[in-house]
Length: 423
Image (cartoon, rainbow, N blue to C red):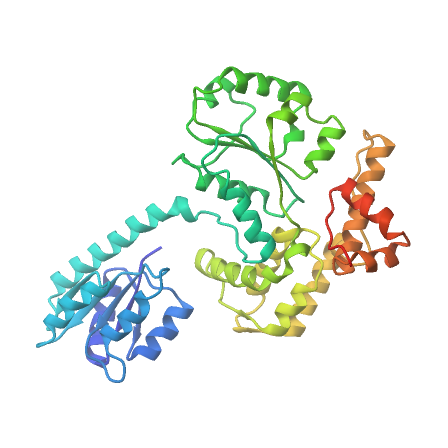
């Protein structure tokens, strides 16, 4: 994808000339005649580079530069364009964060070499930040802030960590977040059962197992033996994940006892129903992501549509919400997303996926399970759905399912479900 350059200059001839030259060089170009227009373009389409004139009416270029660079998240390089008598000001602008400056009348050779240098510096910064920012969890709710703090306490340790949470809740994203924080500079790698353990263990990396129950008990035991025999000789960490609750796996003997002891850190990823206040931020993040990476039209979810989506039960968790956002963006090019459009798409989604309907649940239960295990799977899904529909309220849940609160507390704890206690 070619770089996008924003040209900000109040002179129409300059804007026209620079657009022609830069487009001939293969760049995508936006133009703005004043600060207000420049800010509107930056909000809708983030540029890779800005060419900014110093002398403009109302708000001058240096003032605008200071405004942009006051944000710690602004890493877009800015090249100042100075006319006669403003060179000293342009030099001063570099102290406020400008990458460089070019003098008018513009030398095309100088301009293009400066553009290339600025874009190169931006790409180097992006590469440096890629690992740090890759798949960082989205959301600022209290429960996610606590989860981040819990994970941050593990960043300097190589002890194995176990993540549990519903499918689609973001277990892999949180595992990547832990890997990103760790002392290793290597990205997290998927644990491949087809590769020899002796080949994997010397890696200076975090090894990720997406579903521990996919490994037989014998494989888990051999894995434990290999880790123990290599202990202390390699700075790797195993990050293990499952949609089953860790305590329940241990109780049901689905992981060997000594391996259960090895994973001293068990972290539960909350369901989306437990942090619906993060949905507006998730909407904004994925709208921008799809607009940038898949060139889908930018569209805006208003307050009413956000509230509708906050109150919807997402049985497929964040993964389902992400797919729904993609469907909405592809549905129309109108920037504002209407409430009725969202209602219709939600109804269609529920018809295509009956498990999303509020009045039904669908489970695939293996006939290899014992009756107790099958009953437990049903109870977990049944109570999880009612818990979401009751607003995570234990009193309301008790009314819906016809059970005493005391009994429900014990049952929910056994199933690994969490709710707010009522006073």
